Amino acid sequence: MKIANKLMAVMAGFLVLLASATAWAAVGQPEPWQLGLQDAATPVAEFIAWLHDFLLWIITAITAFVLGLMLYIFVRFNAKANPVPSKNTHNTLLEVAWTVIPILILVVIAVPSLRLLYLQRDIPVADMTMKIIGNPSWNWTYEYPDLGLNEDGSAKVTFTSYLKSREDAAKDDVPYLLAADVPVVVPVNKTVKVIVTSDPEGIIHAWTIPSFGMKIDAIPGRLNEDWFKATKEGVYYGQCSELCGKDHAYMPIEVWVVPQDKYEAWATLLGSAPDDAALKAFLGTIKPAPQLAQN
Image 1 (cartoon, rainbow, N blue to C red):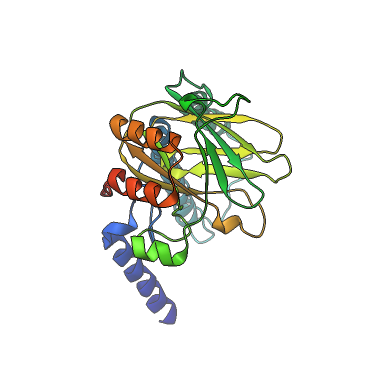
Image 2 (cartoon, rainbow, N blue to C red; image 1 turned 45 degrees about the vertical axis):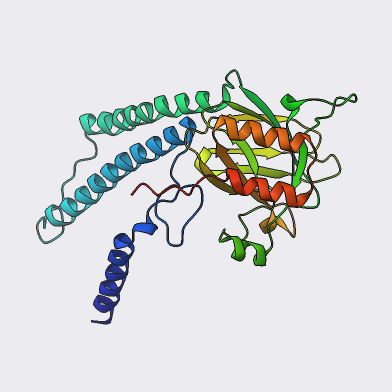
């Protein structure tokens, strides 16, 4: 009876979870008790979500088949139903089937998996380039070389993004540990190539945006590259996803995807080296409206 009551309680909790609209998916950030992936905002993330669902159907079918086969064997071939056990040692057709069918299943899985891998790693012609540097002080530095270079070859537009304090996050109604004091701003529907590295005196980090379907390591002394093309305006959050030390949990990533004209206005302002007050005031005028989750 106790076991039955516990099972009923678990099922009731699961049904409550399913009934919660916020438990399914979120746009740009995780939600408490979330099920499923964050809503996709790039072609790569959309492909990842499709492949995830596709594999879930295959896994479910295999699990149901094996469970049904086991139940059939329990009933059909138990000692009571078969007091004299069979002496069969092999079955050629069955052995061929359980070898060929798994191979075919793996081929069906391999084809879209390789297509996704090619899509992720084949960097298309970019509309803009952004350099990302993971710092040993557990924050990110961003450079926009397309917006101009200094005489020494360094980018004119560069800034370091820090964790927004708990008080400021509460005041601005943004998620603490995900929100940054200065966000990354990129235009919508533009291919952005990112060059990622870490301070030569630093440690390995990883720049990750779940809604973009991307995660790329930032390694000291090495340049990695990735890309994304955000097709939806909005605010997207991520975090360092490499265990990088004591402040690993305090290394957020915040990306704003805005229309081209707002991006150009932001780039112009940043190129004039504004003070913090002017920058924050301007950011308030271009912040994208929150998007609703697609349930």
